[in-house]
Length: 275
Image (cartoon, rainbow, N blue to C red; front, side, top):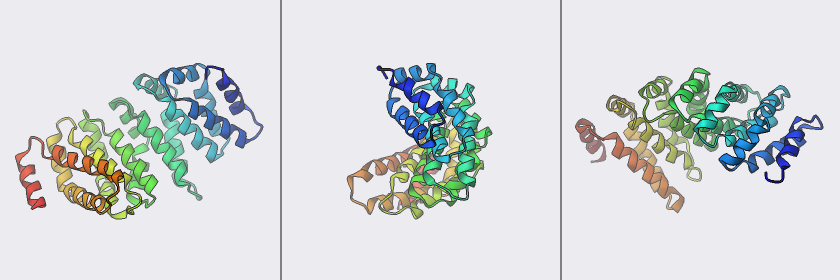
């Protein structure tokens, strides 16, 4: 960055030499973008417009890498707001839709879009913008149908990030989109070698539980079977002794705690489940 290599890489992105060279140049740029300072410097070089133009080329690998690179530019809330003003969200949702509808689906392409959506969910305003743009239906589709552990990992994470802790509106939008059904299946479709998504199941339930006016939301989650999901997830993680899963168990236990917060009926129901 300090040697102005980024300017050369951006020129390579603009060039029509080959899609492979443009792809490698974008890959180098996302590797360089590791701090707010670098992100601001790249924005000043017009990187956003350059990456948005990759959509016109039609190469899904290049578009996917461009989406991923844009997500690394989101280093803080101010940058997310700036990128949203440059129509990054429609670009992300368009990529998610193309990845979903492609006859030759590549899970990595969809995961890149999910990561970008999660990074852009820095505020209630942006989360609602993503939902309005059609992001929700695509995420829920994969959450309810996919068996790919990476896709499930990133969909669960995206749902958790979209669920802003101080927004009951987003909680209702997500629950009405049938997110609960998709989250419920995670403990039963993941293999013992790929349980990372269970940690984000716990994370997502925590975010729902902390939503504004969340007592009713917690009750809705319990009625949807969230306690069964978490118990199944806990048993699945407990079957594996690997230290990697200690964080998963912590997330799930925290979810149990938050679910019963300030609600005596829910605490009684939880004891009944655990007895």
